[in-house]
Structure formats: structure tokens, C-alpha cells
Image 1 (cartoon, rainbow, N blue to C red):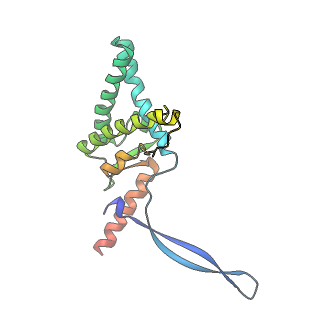
Image 2 (tube, one colour; image 1 turned 90 degrees about the horizontal axis):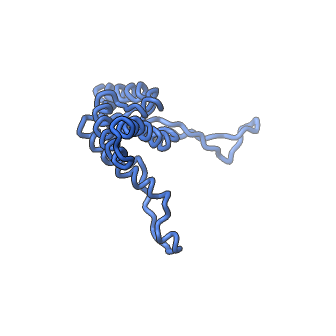
Image 3 (tube, rainbow, N blue to C red; image 1 turned 180 degrees about the horizontal axis):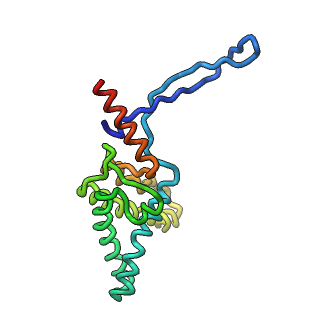
Amino acid sequence: MKISELKIKKIIHRPTRQFDVEGKRIYNEFEYDLPYNASFKNNEKQRIFAKLIDLLPFFLIFYFIFHQHGFLSILYSISSVILLGTLSESTFGTTLGKKIFKIKVIDDFGNYPKITKSFCRNLLCLATFKLIFDDYIPPLNEVLKIEHTETNFTIHMNNKVCKTYIVKESQLWEIRKLLDAQIHNTIS
């Protein structure tokens, strides 16, 4: 069973135009199977800050200990974060920055991602990270008031492509419990 296939039963009460003898509104009850949402609010901001926390120690090491130029220190720290983040996510499901925010990375089966999938999502994260910060610098067509269509890249693109999920550590137990329940229901 996969997280993308999980369904949650949701009961919704919709009011009718009818009232009972006591004057209370009568409600119809509808039960829906909705897809499970593994994400949480404000995860985009937390992920950006987590990535910056991951970058900072490497930048400081390259800049102050190895006396590299600032630009080179940034480049070296980005490549270090990609490599160390790949190893850390595939082994522990988290990085230093994600650990501070109590975030875990899991694949569609609820496990930590394999090293190739983790490497792919870290590379894609770098690409979307650049596009997010490019949004802060207005493009020339905005400055000149030329109409254009805007593409909306987010830091979630890497998860969509690699079929991984960013979840809170507290959600991990709930997700694994749901997956186990679905497996037992499928077998029965």
C-alpha cells in the first residue's frame, strides 16, 4: 500500500431546508473517502529555513577554516549539502535543518527514501530553490509593465517528481499505522 493510495473517511453534515418538531434543523449525513493529506501547514517556509540551516555550517567551514572566497564557499557548501543531505535523508530520514523543525522525508511506502531518490530530490530542490529566490527579483517584463504568464515553481516540485513526502515526526507513526491498516484490510 502507498501513501498516495490512502483514503480517510470523512463524514459531512449538510443542512436541509426542513426542521423537526422542536424546530431544530435536520441535517443529511454524507460519508466520503478523501485522499490522505500527508503535508502540513507552513512546511514551505520551514523547508527553506531548514535548507539554509543545512548550508550555514558548511559555508562557515569553507569561508573561515579553509579561507575560501565567499562565492566559492557558497558553491562548495551547496554541493556538500546535496551530498550529505542525500546520505542523511536515506539513512535517518532527516538533515540537521529538518531535525530542528522535526521534519522527516519518506517515500510513497512510508520508508526513508533510497539513496538515488534522495539524491534526485536534493538536486531538484536546488533547482526550485533558485527559482523561488528568482521571484524576489522582478523580471524585466514586470519592470516595463509587459503582460506575461507566470510560472509558479515551489519547493514541493522535488517531492512530486520523486514521490516523496515531507511530514512531521509526529505524523510518521500515524502514517505507518494507516498503511498497516490498509495492508491488513487488503489481505482480509
